[in-house]
Image (cartoon, rainbow, N blue to C red; front, top):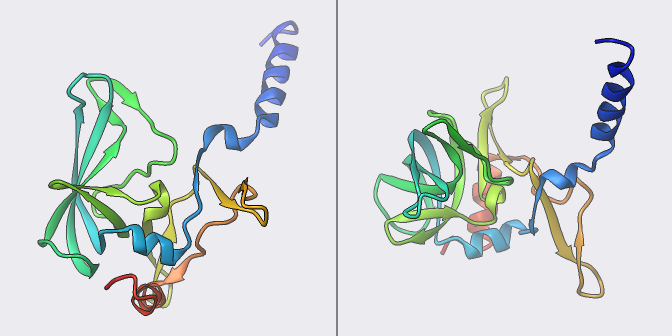
Length: 190
């Protein structure tokens, strides 16, 4: 880098650091757990078996079919496997990323809040509808929402939608047993 390109590089870096992170976020309605549960046709604890990416019929968008093994069903009916349809993916050297739609690695486990669309399922509330499961040092399972690319909006006292501060407003990580208890106690899983 020479003395003429250094100021330009520094100016671009400064511009990039000042851009708001919400510019890279999808804005969705904040869904508290009772509402998330109510809107879901099915709530399952599942593990990702594999993912297939395909083009839409008009070849304009990519979709991922995420095949899930259902470990436990808290709401709804269905078989031991289901298919979750998500926008985005990589195919034929083309990548389509949809902000707010989470990615899942093979073998990943999560609690999924789902709406049924024929034989396929979609997430309720984008990343709010997938709580990733992790195990801590004591062997306890935690469910953490996948909301890193979401800006959540909720009605204020005047009934107007207002954005929550970036990184705030979503569900906090919960122990898996506590999450299940809250879903069932709220009557949402009935």
